[in-house]
Image 1 (tube, helix red, strand yellow):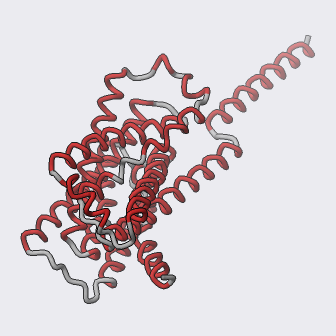
Image 2: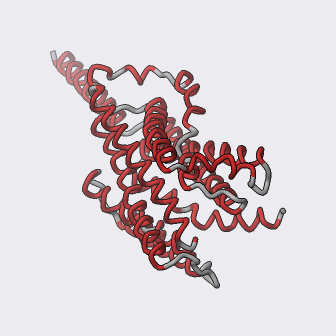
Image 3: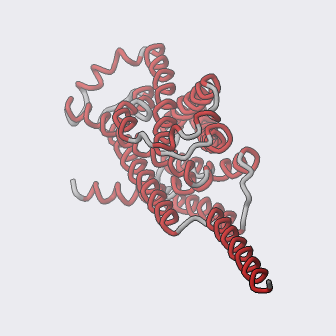
Length: 328
């Protein structure tokens, strides 16, 4: 009888330990998933750094060699999304259809994509105007403040908890960016009038604020509305918000009448017609690489982390510009 009782107690304890083990495994992801998460974060970060750096350098090349259209410079930042369409069929996974019963309505998804696209179009044209009317140093200094704006939006929209490490990284990134910009400000002056300088300042501040808001809304969309975890969803957000932004920018291009001067601009481009087209094409592709990276970092990490990685391109671009100028 005692043997039966002891055996039963042993079985209960083993079952209890098995349940605890299963519960522990559900909380702590296996090492393989952790390695996969780190690998994806590294890939997305490289996309952000390489895409934004290349796009910025090509954008400067466009203006230096004769490009003048503000709307064309804006359009290339979102018009490259068709290159991502084939990836939609490659990235179909089982997880994409797993929670179809809890999926948000089509109206909600369309509304979010439309909102993100409108913000993207508005922020892009504001950035272009700011860069046109401000010295590069002043423009970069104001742009670096978007980390602070993003921290505020992340606190209230995404319930971001501020640890000492996060606060330290925000302060270091903003301060180092400011010091770098002031160091590069030697002898640089703005040729714009005071009125245009004020417009450029306000547009850049508005763009930095709007871009920080886009990142926080994207994180809110992933966590609270979409509630999915696949690469397909990263592509969906990137493509559809770019589609909406491209449509809005095309309306501005034709309404402003700048499309009439594009042919003359291409013929007068210092590097030739083919180089003019290729500059725009590669700029558009580079911005799409950046878009996938930034959306992926929001998806796997947070909007604040994605913005901090994006800020790291500030010291990278001048270094690359010097290297390429030496190789000419």
